Length: 66
Image (cartoon, rainbow, N blue to C red; front, side):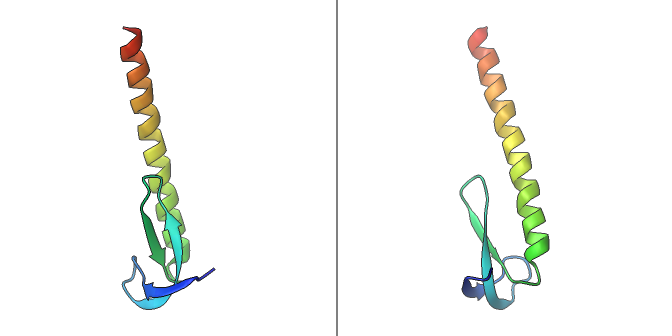
């Protein structure tokens, strides 16, 4: 699970880290203690980002039809 050593983006402590990838291309890293929260945080962000992309695409399709 933990792949690199560095600073956790959630608790800001030095530890072994696991990467978490966002749909917008960014990657943040969490320690083992923050892993569950980080996974939920990234998942919720990605769900919101995907919904926003779908709204944008629907709006563009509607504008093209008009």
